[in-house]
Image (cartoon, rainbow, N blue to C red):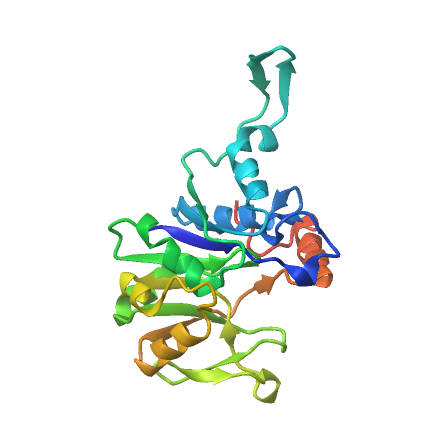
Length: 260
């Protein structure tokens, strides 16, 4: 099963941390948050990734194209690049990473529609945002998705109060959205989706299509959107404060998503 990661946004709210790189490349410790997300999926055995690129895509492409150089100490004899000696090995051999240019200004729905050709013959795929980490049980998430027979599953998390809340019934089905979650203090969309191929029928190539708006609303109307309830750690990196928080967890070896 492929893992699709949305990596194309401008990240305007965190420009004070890193202005010249895309948000998924902002580091936690010595690795980009995007790497942390990919590494987390890989420990559950999911090593095929499709990256939906946009803003400063060349930074992400360069990082993975030259991954051995970025992730290793090495000795090089100038004038003879074939003489490179790497002094430490990484554990990411076998990762398959498709870099998909999905447009500088495309919104999330358009980006997902554009990568349909890279899903191959798989009956479903996973999707998440390139700026959030958590300790979601991916095995249980996939098991839950396959159990209910609906088109879409999202992971519902307990958030900071600034996000829009999910309205969920007793059968774990999404019935609507509440844009003022401070009133009831419920769950929000934390990403970590699983979609059947039928999701592409809800999407178009229109650059303005936002996955979380019209397509999600239509899924709710069709009773095709379910929620996997996650009670553990989840944290986006939208602001400098959140950047500092995630790095503090990592530096103190208290990062709940680090299972490697």
